[in-house]
Image 1 (cartoon, helix red, strand yellow):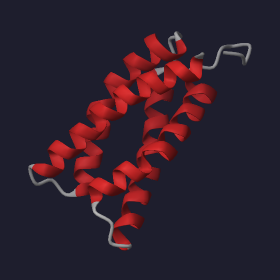
Image 2 (cartoon, one colour):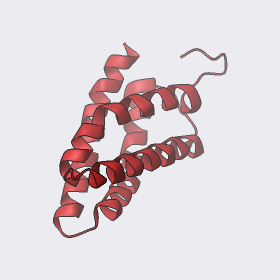
Image 3 (cartoon, helix red, strand yellow):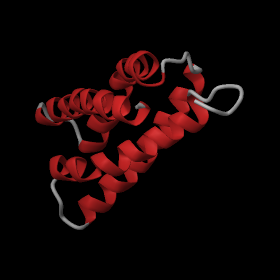
Image 4 (cartoon, helix red, strand yellow):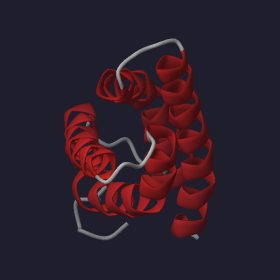
Length: 120
Protein backbone atom coordinates (compact mmCIF):
# COMPACT_ATOMS: atom_id res chain seq x y z
CA UNK A 1 0.00 0.00 0.00
CA UNK A 2 2.88 2.37 0.77
CA UNK A 3 4.21 2.02 -2.77
CA UNK A 4 0.76 2.93 -4.15
CA UNK A 5 0.64 6.01 -1.90
CA UNK A 6 4.17 6.91 -3.02
CA UNK A 7 3.17 6.66 -6.68
CA UNK A 8 0.15 8.91 -6.11
CA UNK A 9 2.09 11.49 -4.12
CA UNK A 10 4.99 11.12 -6.53
CA UNK A 11 2.78 11.96 -9.48
CA UNK A 12 1.63 15.09 -7.70
CA UNK A 13 5.16 16.02 -6.59
CA UNK A 14 6.54 15.32 -10.05
CA UNK A 15 3.89 17.44 -11.70
CA UNK A 16 4.67 20.35 -9.37
CA UNK A 17 8.44 19.95 -9.82
CA UNK A 18 8.26 19.56 -13.58
CA UNK A 19 5.93 22.54 -13.96
CA UNK A 20 8.35 24.63 -11.89
CA UNK A 21 11.22 23.48 -14.13
CA UNK A 22 9.24 24.24 -17.30
CA UNK A 23 8.23 27.68 -16.01
CA UNK A 24 11.76 28.61 -14.95
CA UNK A 25 13.31 27.27 -18.15
CA UNK A 26 10.58 28.97 -20.16
CA UNK A 27 11.36 32.39 -18.74
CA UNK A 28 15.01 32.02 -19.65
CA UNK A 29 16.82 30.27 -16.82
CA UNK A 30 19.69 27.98 -17.79
CA UNK A 31 18.55 24.34 -17.47
CA UNK A 32 20.81 23.67 -14.45
CA UNK A 33 19.62 26.84 -12.71
CA UNK A 34 16.00 25.93 -13.44
CA UNK A 35 16.65 22.42 -12.08
CA UNK A 36 18.25 23.77 -8.89
CA UNK A 37 15.48 26.27 -8.24
CA UNK A 38 12.69 23.77 -8.99
CA UNK A 39 14.32 21.27 -6.62
CA UNK A 40 14.65 23.78 -3.78
CA UNK A 41 11.10 25.06 -4.26
CA UNK A 42 9.69 21.54 -4.45
CA UNK A 43 11.38 20.15 -1.33
CA UNK A 44 8.89 21.66 1.13
CA UNK A 45 5.90 20.45 -0.83
CA UNK A 46 7.43 16.99 -1.24
CA UNK A 47 8.20 16.76 2.48
CA UNK A 48 4.55 17.41 3.34
CA UNK A 49 3.21 14.83 0.90
CA UNK A 50 5.83 12.26 1.92
CA UNK A 51 5.18 12.76 5.63
CA UNK A 52 1.41 12.82 5.51
CA UNK A 53 0.39 10.82 2.47
CA UNK A 54 3.09 8.22 1.90
CA UNK A 55 5.02 7.19 4.98
CA UNK A 56 2.74 8.64 7.66
CA UNK A 57 5.79 9.26 9.78
CA UNK A 58 7.66 12.37 10.83
CA UNK A 59 11.10 11.82 9.29
CA UNK A 60 14.02 14.17 9.81
CA UNK A 61 14.19 17.29 7.67
CA UNK A 62 17.98 17.04 7.47
CA UNK A 63 17.76 13.48 6.13
CA UNK A 64 14.99 14.47 3.73
CA UNK A 65 17.06 17.37 2.41
CA UNK A 66 20.07 15.04 2.03
CA UNK A 67 18.00 12.65 -0.08
CA UNK A 68 16.97 15.51 -2.33
CA UNK A 69 20.55 16.77 -2.53
CA UNK A 70 21.60 13.32 -3.74
CA UNK A 71 18.65 13.18 -6.15
CA UNK A 72 19.55 16.64 -7.45
CA UNK A 73 23.17 15.58 -8.05
CA UNK A 74 22.08 12.50 -9.97
CA UNK A 75 19.52 14.55 -11.90
CA UNK A 76 22.18 17.14 -12.79
CA UNK A 77 24.46 14.37 -14.08
CA UNK A 78 21.62 12.88 -16.12
CA UNK A 79 20.68 16.30 -17.52
CA UNK A 80 24.30 16.91 -18.50
CA UNK A 81 24.60 13.51 -20.19
CA UNK A 82 21.35 14.00 -22.08
CA UNK A 83 22.52 17.47 -23.13
CA UNK A 84 25.80 16.04 -24.48
CA UNK A 85 23.90 13.62 -26.70
CA UNK A 86 21.74 16.46 -27.98
CA UNK A 87 18.50 15.82 -26.11
CA UNK A 88 16.37 18.86 -25.24
CA UNK A 89 16.24 19.61 -21.48
CA UNK A 90 12.45 19.27 -21.26
CA UNK A 91 12.58 15.80 -22.87
CA UNK A 92 15.57 14.83 -20.74
CA UNK A 93 13.66 15.60 -17.56
CA UNK A 94 10.72 13.46 -18.69
CA UNK A 95 13.05 10.54 -19.40
CA UNK A 96 14.65 10.87 -15.97
CA UNK A 97 11.33 10.91 -14.05
CA UNK A 98 10.97 7.18 -13.39
CA UNK A 99 14.58 6.44 -12.43
CA UNK A 100 14.57 9.50 -10.19
CA UNK A 101 11.30 8.48 -8.51
CA UNK A 102 12.63 4.99 -7.78
CA UNK A 103 15.85 6.37 -6.30
CA UNK A 104 14.01 8.91 -4.13
CA UNK A 105 11.55 6.29 -2.85
CA UNK A 106 14.30 3.87 -1.86
CA UNK A 107 16.38 6.58 -0.19
CA UNK A 108 13.40 8.02 1.69
CA UNK A 109 12.24 4.61 2.83
CA UNK A 110 15.75 3.66 3.94
CA UNK A 111 17.13 6.88 5.44
CA UNK A 112 14.30 9.32 6.17
CA UNK A 113 11.13 7.54 7.21
CA UNK A 114 12.61 4.37 8.66
CA UNK A 115 11.11 3.34 11.95
CA UNK A 116 13.40 2.61 14.86
CA UNK A 117 12.80 -1.11 14.51
CA UNK A 118 13.83 -0.87 10.84
CA UNK A 119 10.34 -1.73 9.59
CA UNK A 120 7.93 0.69 7.97
